[in-house]
Length: 314
Image (cartoon, rainbow, N blue to C red; front, side):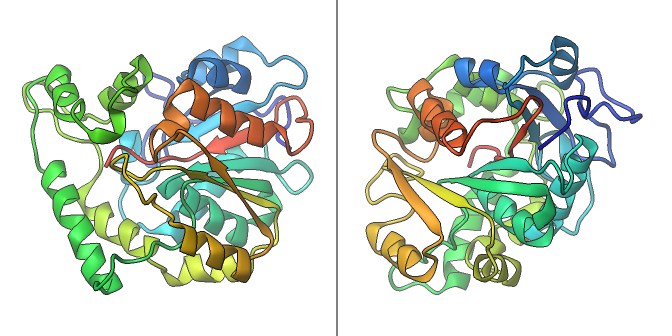
């Protein structure tokens, strides 16, 4: 587990919001009790100054290379590079073989977390994969390459768009069907964070160059498939009831989950009713289910780090 003294405040330059400056991956963090209660993150400086009560986990939330405030970092991208970056974050936060971390990854972050557990197993006590981590199945009639191109086109188009204000970007996202009836201040904070530049030429923060390499791995890159085959840490997969657009079937249909149970019996699969790919982490009920899954693995020592490496909207 992560030592209480290891607050990620190594002698490294930081930005005004407490982020590690390039070329290092940007990090936010705070006590898990606060994050679970509000659904919102705290700045690294706030977390470092607040102290952690005994038995309360500390959450360390990095921006993956090429995304968020890590968007100026150069390639290579892909899950292997993300895993190595995450290992550096964990070591800076005080994790080691004697005190490994509980690693919680949502969406693309789940894929990176799985590869992290393979490449740096000594740092990982157990994994909680949240609606991600298992190779995606191409739509019927499509090859993985065709599915990737179908995914990349709309995403790349969004990344090239400019917005006059944060409010204009919120207006762009509010009609998203996954957010219907679930729009919260936490959604707004999340979406505002996914902006870079200055008005009136704000752009989504994800680097376009990172998009292809990252998404190619989601359909079964070598590092991901190898990590699944060699998985040796306790792993829980939480599946949202609905998909990225709030639709049925979910991101992982029943037949995919049946195959996971057959081919990887060490992975425990648990459904989270009433959630979609976003609300499973960004509403009170969804976040509570994730927090419960983390805590259900056993008591967390003071200073334990739960690493949530999610991606930006898409």
